[in-house]
Image (tube, rainbow, N blue to C red; front, side):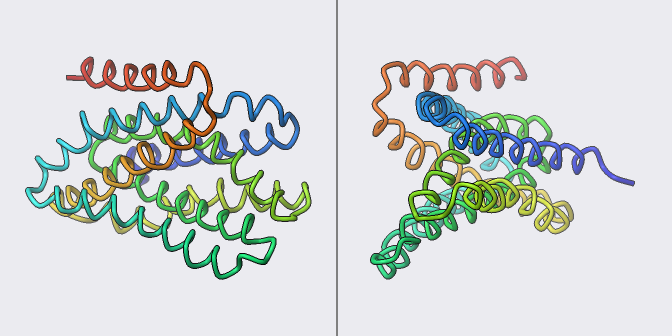
Length: 244
C-alpha cells in the first residue's frame, strides 16, 4: 500500500518540476516578463528558506540527534564546495568553449535540483508539516531556476528549442528523479539517522537561500526585492507559529 508520506513527497517534487517548467516556458516565450519578475520570486524563496531553516528545520534536527549541528555544517560546506568545484575547475578547464557558459553551469543546476528531490524525501519523512514548509520556499525558487537554466544554455550556443528541452531535463525532471531514487532508502532509516539527514538538508537550504539566491537578487538590484524577502520570511514564521 502506498503511504501518505510517499504521495506527499511525489506531489511536492512533481509540483517543483511543473513550476520549473513554467519558468522555462515563460522565459522562452515572454523573455521580458520573466527577467522583470524573477528577482522577486528569488527574494521570496530566499526569505522562506532562511526563516524555515533557522526557526523550524534546524531546531528539529537538533532535537532528533545531538550530532546534527555537525551535519548542518557539512551540508552547507558540501553544497558550497560542489559549486566551487564546478565554477573553478570545470568552467576554468573549458573556458574557451561555448558550453563553459552553458552546459557546465546547467549541469551544476541539475545536480542541485537532484539534491532538492532528496531534501523533499528527507523533510517529508520527518513530518508532513516540515516537508510542506521546506517545499514552499524550494518551489518558489524553482521558477527562477528554470529561467536561469534556459538563459545559460542559450548563451552557450544551444538553439532555443534544444535549450527548452535540455533545461527541462536538467532543472525540472531531475527533482522528482532525486525523490524517487532516495525515498526507498530514506523511508526505512531510524529517526536518529533521519535527524542527521535533516541537519544536512538544513545546511543545504541555508546555503541556497543565503549564498545562492540573495547574491543573485542583489545583482538584479530590484527596487522592492527587500519587501519580497520580508514577505517570504513573514509567511514562513506565521505558518510555523500557527502550527505551534
